[in-house]
Length: 398
Image (cartoon, rainbow, N blue to C red; front, side, top):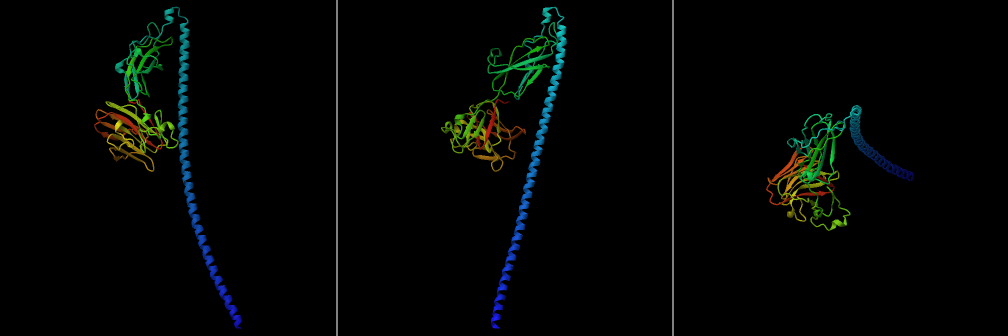
């Protein structure tokens, strides 16, 4: 009997132990299920968030592509309308010319047959001509509305070419640029780069028969500041190519290793023209991959090898950065003033040496970013710093 009771006690103890183990196992399973549900909800939430971001990005990209397509459609429609208008005008001119040719066939007088448009020599009206904002307006005064013993003047032709000579009669070598089919006695040539001292212009009249003689050429002064990068002053990790500077930290070219004007973290290059009197203007445009840049002016000899723009008494600059966060500041003599403006896509720099004014302008938004007022005591040079990316400059501007 006692033996049986002892065996029963062992069985009961074993069952109790198994029961406790089962409770622990069930509790572990419940915890695992709860954790799985929580993790599943978290993953689903993250997935929904990513899907929402992806959907938003797709919608945004779709809107951009739609806008691009609409703009391209409008451009092509405008181009087709322009071509259609030109075609109609050409057809009308062809019909008029055909009628004129038929009338000419009945002319027996040789002099009358070769009658052309009237000469307008020395008729460019310099008092009405203007040079402004990289555009030239040329005006002239015709003697009359019809050619001598001939048909009416129908249109004008203007030719122009750039030169550094103030005597238009001595200009040689340069090719004439031509503007045809001018209907009025005034025309504006826009979008010019003033990289010479003068632009010479001349004009003549035409009718269906022939063209008259050109007027006496007139030289129009085109003052502007033209300069390039002085590659000899560029930091060894800066690649100078035309009007563009690119930061190249890897694989520095052997030809640039010997550059010693600037070193360390002074990724600087200077302009190749001095500024010692008068007014100067140029523009800088950061390219898409830029991270940090500075633009301004400096005394050529006052920048040390490791000096950065704006950290010495002889340099003034505008600093812009979109590395980690966007920032814009004006710097001079190791002092910085934070500016509450959006980062400009195109920066205009205006320097009035005589009055000590240095202005930085957001060209696209037409707003003044910052201005320095000082007294310049040495010749200045344009100065640039770029780290991580590229910048390009535009000169020959008014």
